[in-house]
Length: 153
Image (tube, rainbow, N blue to C red; front, side, top):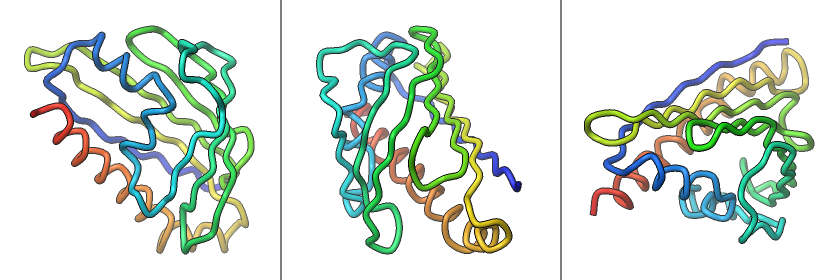
């Protein structure tokens, strides 16, 4: 098993409460996901505050136009400082994504820490190196760009 670990940080000029209100709502994920991924939350969670045990269903087109279903569970919540989502069903063998929010002088430091494993052994490792890892980096670069536009206007 070859586990990848990725980390992204971004400072946003917002309050801790504003950060939590935006990032803890699954329906906001579509706004910060590249449009070509056709990301859609299937679960009806518009009025439900995030909680440990929450299961969220998605449909998306992550790579090469191939549609995928994805189910994640929110496994940890420490409002308003962090939450963790883990894949229960989907394209990865393992997916553990931590979202951290820390107060700084100039706003909120948002940190994403991702641990993941692709399926298919050495073939999956090769595909990850040449395709999946780069795609994940592109998704988070897109998010950083969109969030900068959203929260600095």
